Image 1 (cartoon, one colour):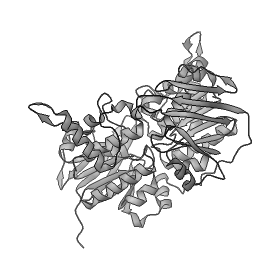
Image 2 (cartoon, one colour):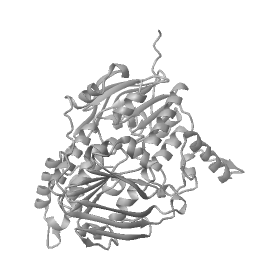
Image 3 (cartoon, one colour):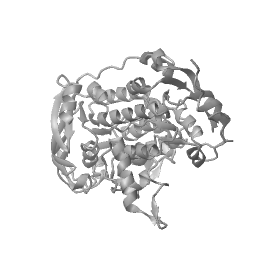
Image 4 (cartoon, one colour):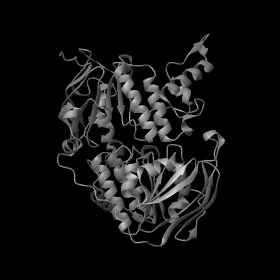
Length: 504
């Protein structure tokens, strides 16, 4: 049987950043009608390779060669690769917040009439694209008012609308719930049947083994192996990613019941999104010291809105009461929440959890400036000492404390968000998608850290779209549906079937 020649190749690619070799003689081949999974730990070089293939790192900034349909490609910009037929959905969303969903979906291809935008046709075409993808979002809604999961779907719709011959997807399901993931995987299967070549980057190995025809593993900027999926096992992929056999992640044992740390009483939230319907209605629960309360629910159920409201950052008028250690708190702003002993690791770490151009040290210090200052002036020695301890304790991989946070991998950025709060030793830690977009090794490390924090008496509320994660680490699980609590399960009662039935 004749082998189909590659449509896209990376040949002997090497890419350096100051003090770091991101890629070292990497080879990669993509064939028409193939879904090729590219996997590796955070920092393995996956996103760097994708940025080379899409022209974000232009020719001349790396060694080696990109070959497109048998000819060397000279991409000087993202526009060059886009015009050559490469569509990409990056892990970092690239939507225009001030535009509507429809405007973002058709950005650059807006229909015109008599030299003016034809708004009715624009929204009709956008609705048609979303309908084909099975996405139920108002095309006239401003993108800034959508949750991260919905924004991810809009980004995917924009990339898929033109049926380019090559599609690159970097963590496309990181913010999607189970039903949205199934819709996307079914769509990718259809695109494969049409001959479209797809590079699929994901830390969710179940998805990779479901959808991929071939798997290539990168580690420390090197190509470790590339084989058809049926020649891999999940254990072999993980071992190739981390360079060793994966240790079993311990299941978090239920702690002895401690004092009530957090009480949420009849919480309601109103905003103009979701068609004007309340985002939260009559939500009440408690969390004890040393306990992990999981928050489950489909996208749009209110998980993020719940944690944001508890943290004093409600996206609209709210009512109800929040108590910490038995004391009611005003929650006029996040400052009130922090003063009361609350901390939040937000869903979108890049937009809400970090200041990316700032150094790792500065980001780690932001939440406890009062602890490292004398008479209002930062004690730099004390700041560095605290920063070095956090980097060591959390295993943050960074060239130095003074490296820009934007240069870190996703897992290390997430550890930095966690680290900035831990010096304050909050009474209650709110986690919104704490392992979104991080690799299996970093996920295990974060789970172990959560277990350690609860063993010291901290109360944790964790919202996640990954049901296996909630089942593994939670002592209890509350299920949200349309802003209401639809059910509550103990560890013994919680099963995937029971929770999904409750959520839907």
